[in-house]
Length: 181
Image (cartoon, rainbow, N blue to C red):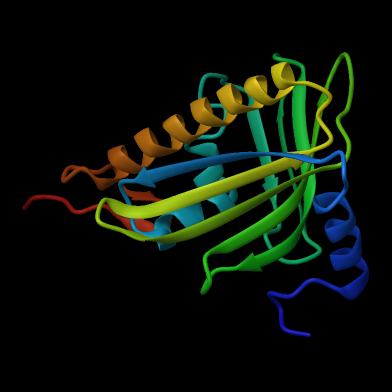
C-alpha cells in the first residue's frame, strides 16, 4: 500500500459515511493567493495551521500527523471547543486530503462527519474545493458549518496573502518570504 492510500477497512468506513443516505454535503470553492504547495503546508503542518486556524483566539493548540491513519486535534480551551479527526487520504502530489471531523464543545460531540479537500492550480495561485459531509438534521446546521468554514477559509486567505508580501517576516508555510536588500 502506498503511503497516500488508506487501508481497506478505513476506506470502507469512510465510504459508508460518505454514501450514508442521511449524509448531506456542504461544498465550498475558493481561489487562494498562493500556490497549492503552500496551501497544502497550511493545512498539514502545526505551524501552518497555527497561522490561520481559529486566528481570533490566542490559546489555540494544534497537533497534526497528516498521513493516512494519522490524526489531528485543534483546541481552544478558553472558547471550550476542540476538533479532532483521522486522515484517510493525504496525497500532496494529487492535492487531496480527506479526514473524519469531530467537533467537541460543552454541549456535544459530533459524529459521522468527513471533510475532503482538493487543491489545483489557478490564476490566483490555487483553487480549493472543500466538501464537508455529515448526517445533518436540518439546514440551520449546514448554514452554521458554511459560516464557520467561510470564516476559516477567509483567515487562511489572509494568512497566505500576508506571507506573500515582499517584506515578509521570516518563514511561514514552509517558504522564506522575499525581502528587499
